[in-house]
Amino acid sequence: MKILKEGHSFIGTPLIVGLVLIGVGGNEISIIIGILFILVSLFCIYFFRDPKVQITDGDNLILSPCNGMVLEVSETEKDKIVRVFLSVLDVHLQRSPVAGRVVSVEYKPGKFLKAMKPQAHIVNEQNIIIIENKSGKYFVKQVAGILARRCVSWVKSGDVLKRGDKIGMIKFSSQVDLHMPKTVNIRVKQGDKVVAGVTIFATLNY
Image 1: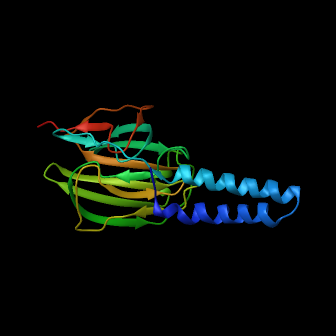
Image 2 (image 1 turned 90 degrees about the vertical axis):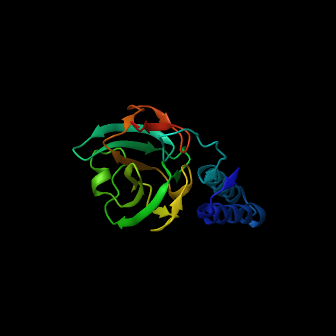
Image 3 (image 1 turned 30 degrees about the vertical axis):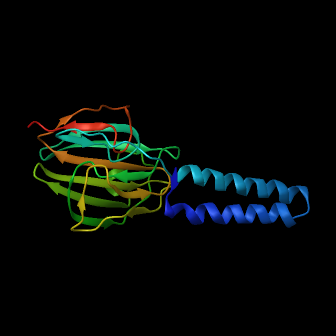
């Protein structure tokens, strides 16, 4: 299993501090604090994991862009939307739900409400990655939460993606929304657990 490069400093710093405290502290309190630092490092290894997955294959599929639990499935006049909550225990990298070309990547500053709050996807800091193909445009929204203070995008305008390609990550608990064309058939519901690049979010009608 790989570790995302964004996690290297979160892993290395507490590990070094912990080892130093244990090695040269010379007293019980230093050893206990050192162990706590090492435990933090081990948690960060777990959090920033990048497990190998088998991308789901098939025609006309829209795959989950993230790991987590479906918060809401909704529909507007323009699109269909699936919102997913990512806990600190979920894998936090995002994948492209479809094959296509990146139209734009937009950063929007904002607040840091809890990711499960109804207004979080509107007012919180977020990255919006727009991917387009012949079926329409797909908006992947990386939404920061009360702990997640940075959304990281690994793609840029003009990039051509395969379905399941890695496109970014959010540091610590957060939310990911996927806006899809009205023509899709939603295949998930509130409360479902989903896996990036594996779970089928929706299918196309043709």
